[in-house]
Length: 164
Image (cartoon, rainbow, N blue to C red; front, side, top):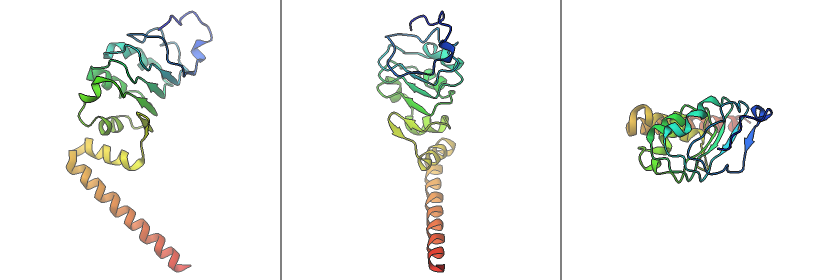
């Protein structure tokens, strides 16, 4: 990335909505403590070391790393430590390397609301967390629990309606 370290106001920089110039590594950003959104779409990011400085951005909530060259699962493990609400990783080879990528990523980032342009709904989060907790069997059990809860809620609404 360009050298940002000389600008006095940059610690208050909130958003980079325009993709930043091609860069193989994210550097000189750790002082951007107010940065909330970062677009690194179509860069040259490839391994965990390229992303290390992101861990120094406490307010980062939105990260677009789509269409990079990330192939290192450790890079995704590093991303999972961030408190993101939006993450875009589509178009990176690493997605094929992570078993059940969407489920696992949703379970590993509890604050995530959007993954690769698709919302994360509460039910999907429950199923993903169950899958990571105990595999397909636990996910099936969680689906049954959700089904039972929905049926119970529906019955309560019907009873309330009948009482009117």
